[in-house]
Amino acid sequence: MQKLRIIKDRVAQGTMFSLTILSILLVAIIAIGLYLKSAPVLDDKSLWTLLFSSEWRPMKGEFGFLPFIMGTIWVTILAILFSLPISLLTAVYLTEYSKPIVRKFVFPALDILAALPSVVYGVWGVLVIVPWISQHLAPLFVDFSTGYTALAAGIVLGVMVIPLMVSLFVEVFTTVPVELRQASLALGATRWQTAIRVVFRKTLPGIIASVVLAVSRAMGETIAVLMVCGCVIHIPESVLDACYPIPALIANNYGEMLSMPFYESALMFAALILFVVVLIFNLLSRIILYRLEKTEK
Amino acid sequence: MSIEAQNLNVYIKDNHILKDVNIRLPEKQITCIIGPSGCGKSTLLRTFNRLIDSTEGVKIEGKVLVDGQDIIHSGAEITELRRKIGLVSQRPCPLPMSIFGNVAYGCRINRMFKKRKQLIYHVQKNLRDVGLLDEIKGRMHTPAARLSIGQQQRLCLARSLAVQPEYILADEATSALDPISSKTVEDLFVSLKERYTIIMVTHTLRQALRIADNVVFMYLGQVIEAGPAQQVFNHPQEELTQKYLAGAFS
Image 1 (tube, each protein chain N blue to C red):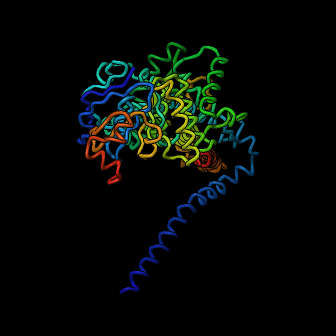
Image 2: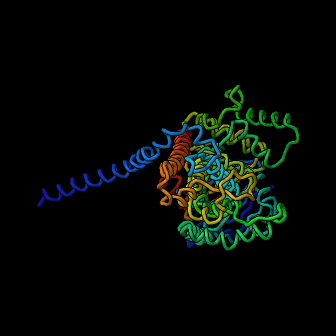
């Protein structure tokens, strides 16, 4: 009997270890898979043409990703511009001002927002944001807009990352010791001054890392963006232009017309771009956090 | 110019922390609040500058008069109150900025100076007052966290003095320091009593013996005995005080 439980323990350890390794391997397998799949188009075209040409004619075998890359960048920047101030102020309110009872209600609400399927945000964008842009905002600047624009995608995406950002910021801000806040308050500082001059300064690396994580989340978001971005292949010139980010491109086209040479490969290359960028961003935020922890000591 | 508590009761959640505290703290002297751990010394101290407000579920009854004004119920400007009452905490807590930035911080948030030159002069003066200026020559703009812990505590004192308070609250300000730094900081407090009213929480009786002009002895949230140090130490009226001074409990 005694032996059996020890064997069980060993087996459990071994199994869990292999499962852990497997999940890490999965990342590598996906990377290799994407690379192998996109190899044909990479062999055919130079990396430069793929990344910086804006000629997208799959029928003729021309694959320039610039419109999609620019679309992704526009939408992501808009989303962050929109969500960063709101999230930062919300987090400051929650950590520096609010009573515990407020937090008790707000945190679960944020969790629900974060857990909502993105298609729900997409529908909300189509029903509310797109008409609002088309009827109220766009007429102030241009003659006509359908409302399906980079701006709509940015707003929807911004709203989507707010819960994530707020919870990251709250986590970062609560690492600041109470004594530090009290040191500032005891000198006659207001809570606002304390937040700006002490809490922000102390947590700047953490804030940056959180933004980077939110950015990589925003870049990969597909369905909600796809529903409101307009999906027109061109480099957007203003926020009121339609755009076509990479995830939308893949979701819209994969599975269709794959008989075309290189088409599937090109889409896999698009996925690879996303993968690499998200990987780099994640590594960056890790490095920043690591530095933060080191300077703390 | 004094701090006075009248019928002060403080509750945190359901705990009655301070019970009917009535004391008057004389100005330009060092008052030591002594008593065993958990007797409400720090709570009392934090009620004086209302840092207690940030504690969850706190309820204050009675009056605390600072310069004759009730700070609990009058809706007094809390930032101005805190500027007037400096705090030196148990562990030094430098702000995440340079040495200069730490001392200048309070001046900046209170908009004390218009010209940078005045600010620099003021920062130097306060650093000199705590004996740090020469020690940190040339390191004025390096992070304050790199100072030794004793230097940090003196920096915190300089930071408090820089906003020109009238009172200084010290919450076991020397207990985290090595003996030499502890002595330096203690001597500083003694030299500062000419200009400031100092209220010090200490749990080392010997420190109180060395520097106190007045002593407040607390036990389980009540003030048992208060008065001039000579009187309380040499002729304690209450049995509890006698026992505490004799070392029956600590």
